[in-house]
Length: 196
Image 1 (cartoon, rainbow, N blue to C red):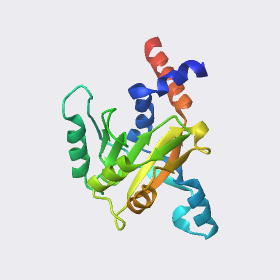
Image 2: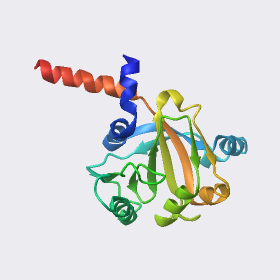
Image 3: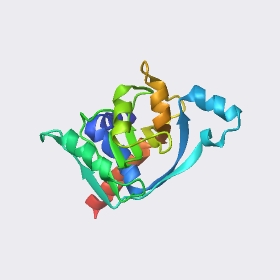
Image 4: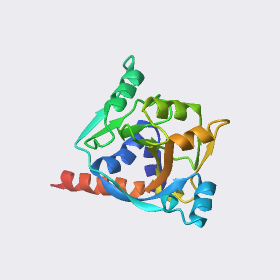
């Protein structure tokens, strides 16, 4: 059962399960990244680096951009730029070939979906953060949405010359989503509808 379900976690089909949780709104335990830096800051009792329950607001609309249409990356980028930091009604899902991120709630709350236990943050991230107006005074928050089973081991590394700029422009967090539970719940609901 678990092996068959795990196939649903890749590509657009996989992303929909992660974004379904965020779209409806939820509270999830979030951990700061990179881990070594977070651990060092926690030892200094820096509260900004402590694990915390983050509340993702419920979204009322979903905006998606398709790979099959010309110019979608530029349209998606322009759309995210326009969504004010305090706006939380729309969840944007980027085309699959979009650089660095997979979605956004607004220009300051960005998401990357991954089933990998490690991701690299490089120039593409820095460029996107700059394009969305992130700055040292107005940092963006990048949430890595991962399966719950790898959230403790998940880590990020930085490409050459990218670490200082990336950390100036954004806070990086990881949250775990229980995909198996979500899919099983969806299958139960589907079977109830079929039975009725």
